[in-house]
Image (cartoon, rainbow, N blue to C red):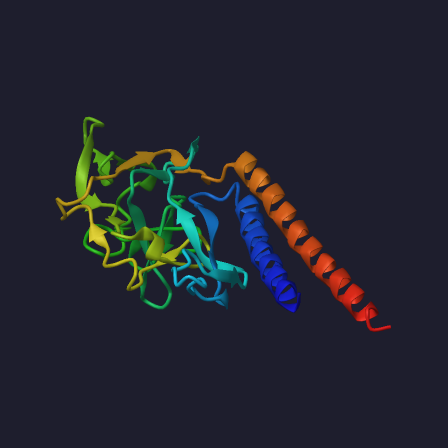
Length: 271
């Protein structure tokens, strides 16, 4: 019975983490580029109550008697399903249709990745720089910040589906400027380290970033101007998952209460 107390406690701890994950999903239901997180569980150790033995006639018993010691969280997986397209009045709002990521350079000089394409042109020391909401420069296909000299009127710049910046000529026809917004993919996007502000960091598990502009091994993503990718959180699914987690938590709590009552009855036998 003491074993059942600790086993049920692991279930309550695991479901609390599950509820924390669900709450984070619901909190980010309106966050651009946010991807749903899902808890995964696995069993803990098993104890042998009775090993495989032979019967009195020397015949092998088919099974042993083992009891598990509970559950724990094994991983929190990110579901990289495409989010809904949301129209935007901003000319520097970009949505990725595909598996790619935008790249931005952090204040520490490292490159980070995001699906949030809510960018703006900001005044830099040497021109107009395309940056995210936190002022981090957006990288082009060569891994360099996208900076335009001040001769360009940034409100006239358009971006085609390949992510290439275009500027109107004398006849007002958009012409490529030779600058493309960088798009990168990963062999294992679930291996990316999740950071604040909808940023991801490369890790050993994710593998090296694959530059879509130079690689022929991946399916190219498309950039859609005047749209943002919304969160892919399905509120109904999260509410159902919350109810399931709550019921599992209650069941484990009931198991602890029952074990306590059984221990109390066993203690009363000595009186």
